[in-house]
Image 1 (spheres, rainbow, N blue to C red):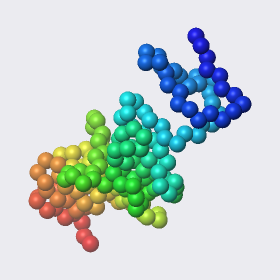
Image 2 (image 1 turned 180 degrees about the vertical axis):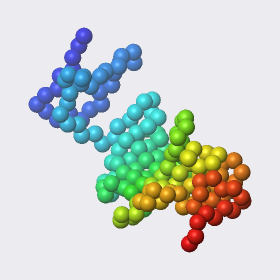
Image 3 (image 1 turned 90 degrees about the horizontal axis):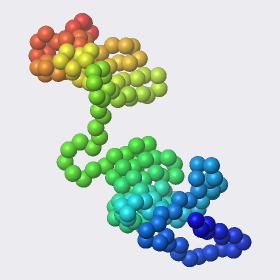
Amino acid sequence: TTNLTISGNTYSRTILPETTLTYSIGSSAQRFNEGWISTLNIGTSTWSMTQSANGRFSLFDAASGGGTERFTVLTNGSVGIGTTTPANALHIQTAGAGEALTLQKTGTGWIGQNFIVGSKTWTLYNSNAISGQGFGVYDTTNSVYRFVIDGTNGSIGIGTTSPLARLDVYGSA
């Protein structure tokens, strides 16, 4: 085993492993304190990470910041998937037709997406609490479903999770 030791000077050279060897940089017991790398290539020229324009963190689908920038984090923390200029905390953009985001849960139960403004919380649900594993708008603040779509027949319920007609309005306004 031969160790590579560099100290005392600044080096600007390429260090290449022999074709049949791989090298580990550090270990779980001996780690580098800091590393300053302009671009990090991962795998066999499949992905690269770099700091792009305006200080943003970028993940590319090719070596050396080539190809397409797939993932971006701006200096303000906004994350972009498919865009280099996220307009919100999370911005997903796709050029193709179809869904841009899929939320999936295996097994039974529910899956939802919360929308919170101030002290009011709404949740969009796909839940077995709704007839036919349906879809609903849940007023989380007041613990009540406001609007549901029956997963079996498409019936709409307002004020009920089990609509008995194509449109079933339960209660009074």
